[in-house]
Structure formats: structure tokens, C-alpha cells
Image 1 (spheres, rainbow, N blue to C red):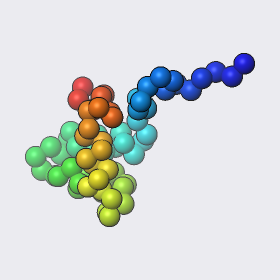
Image 2 (tube, rainbow, N blue to C red):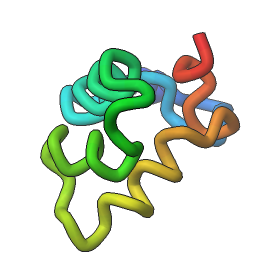
Image 3 (cartoon, one colour):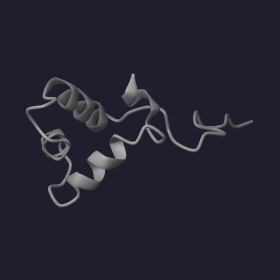
Length: 68
């Protein structure tokens, strides 16, 4: 019998990718110095979509661990 995925019954995944973890680390360490978009670019997100990714990563409904 197959095991269900870790996110069974959850709307959003709870684990962060290495890129997301780098973004969170940069955002926390550079708070007030860099914008969320700058942190997303430095974390490795494409320049064209960095603002969108930063907004998504800061959404506590999608990533509740960000507020911790």
C-alpha cells in the first residue's frame, strides 16, 4: 500500500525549498536594508518574477512558518 504524501489534507505545503529558506534568511537579516524583491532576487528567483515570489512567500496563509 502506498503512503500518502506529507501534505495530505493540507492546502499548502509546509516544508520550504532551499531557495525559499535562503529568501527567508535574507529577508530577516537584511530587514530595513533590502526590499523583499531584492531578497528574492538574491535568493535566486528570476528578476522578472521576484516581486510576485516575494509577495507569495510573505503570505502567512501559504507559508505559516514565515511568521515564526
